[in-house]
Image (cartoon, rainbow, N blue to C red; front, side, top):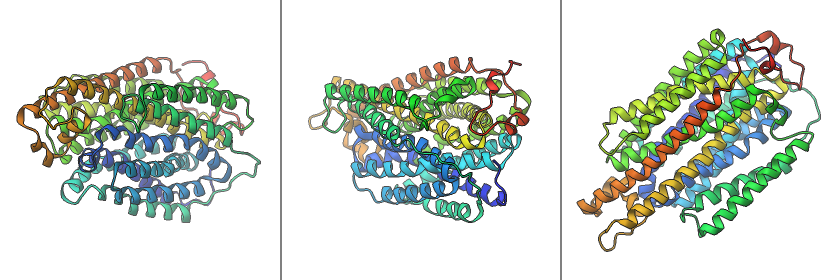
Length: 515
């Protein structure tokens, strides 16, 4: 249902600002985290900072998506901005890693509403052919802002202080919320629908326990033994299985289970799980390599990560233009192939690898993300009517975030296990702990002098090896993603079919005869 009386330009500007906000949070925080760890300590809790954010932003996305279909995009977007900005302000004031993790979780509660609501608004106010180009433009804006983000983040961290990387979110969020509140005028269909709060509770608890089990399995958790951690993961997995059974039986499911019957939608969701894991793997574990292993600064780490944001808008813009001509399948295959190529390049880096090579690997991955993300999103949005577009779009974000949350947790556990085994084998000087805190010294330039040259090189080699195992896991995930996209059907954009789709029933694009 396309909205009448909406100032399209003003709303588009608001969505662009919200995209800019999300890009800044992802790239600036990723750049700043090595310095934050060096200041607050707690390298063993590194993954928790990302996972707490991803946990709350992931499990709330389906709830926000359903609420957006019931009450409109506007109030949900506004609520998300308020929560996100409140969490940003508190993150900037954090004095311990525990506080940082808690406030990042609050940020995630807001992000779970802001990102999918923004994308859904675009789906509402533009036609399907315009939507492909606008989504490419928005991804390009994400990329441009993300290029600024790591560079600006490095400058802020090096010259002002890491706390300001969170405060920078405030003006953009306020302007975006104001524009949406004033210029977005919705006509929400009057219909009696309910939110599956039981399913939401089971999903949140299940994912939380699963992540807690993964994060604590390496002994880095808050008081959890390995046996307890696996019990947590097992209980979480059982709850998620029960959640799926509940969703198949409830009248108003939290996740659009019937949509999984369509190949376009189901493959898009599954591929976004793997894409999210690869994306968070690069965003979370490339900066520590540049800053910790290669001895770079926050500025150099940010510049390296920014190359992903150069490739992403190029891929998104080209994808938006080529989708109408080529259809979805060639674009998603190209995107998955490029992500795998970049991952394999990163898996071959060493401590003496030139930085331009790492920049190229990250850029190729970003190019693939741009092609894949835009194509999957437009394919799903074009497969459902207005009344289901909110939850369908939110589900794309949900599956990408859940992949990132579980992926970064597993990769963090893999890194910590490698650090523990490698540091235990080193003969470190008396008084130097053989745990992750020793590797954490590498992330703080002012503290590197606390280790003698021999110990410093030993710790650096162990850190490099533990990160190398992470990069191999990213390559494996990317390979599975490419194999999955080979199953994507050959379909073309058909706006007439979208307009005629009956309310509440998705179009069977994927059931059309393959071209």
